[in-house]
Structures are given as structure tokens and as C-alpha cells.
Image (tube, rainbow, N blue to C red; front, side, top):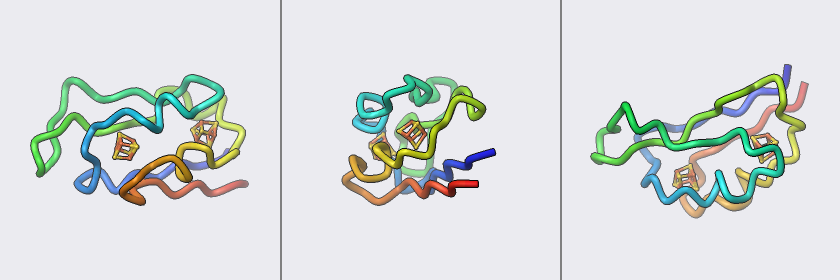
Length: 69
Ligand code: SF4
Ligand code: SF4
């Protein structure tokens, strides 16, 4: 399965990655705060990821790494 890794504590919860994802499988985790006090982005359905890397390209803080299987 493709993997999308988040450096959770670097995320500022801007949501740009969620907007960029063509599969709509990234959302902010409203139940969690990272060390900066933001709700971090997370993957909601890993099986649907096509490893396009749009999320990683969009993120202004280089939080996301996409690993294509
Ligand atoms: S790699 Fe593409 S499909 Fe996978 S989470 Fe990122 S934007 Fe969505
Ligand atoms: S674009 Fe980057 S900083 Fe913004 S929510 Fe997504 S992972 Fe976090």
C-alpha cells in the first residue's frame, strides 16, 4: 500500500493538503493538538491513496512524505 507520512509536529493545520488531494482522503484531526497547538493533518483512508504527491507538493512546511509502493 502507498504510504503518506506526516511530521505531525511541523503541521500548522492550514488544510492546504486536504484541498489538494484528488481523493479527498486528508482531513485535520480535530481530536488532537500537536506540539504547536494545531490540529494536524492526517490520512483518513490510506487504501484510496494513488501516491500522486499533490499533498506533499502543496504543503508549505514540507510536512508530508509520500512513498509509492
Ligand atoms: S498522495 Fe495524492 S492521493 Fe495520496 S493523500 Fe496525497 S494528494 Fe491524496
Ligand atoms: S498543508 Fe502541511 S501544514 Fe498545512 S495542514 Fe497539510 S500537512 Fe499541515
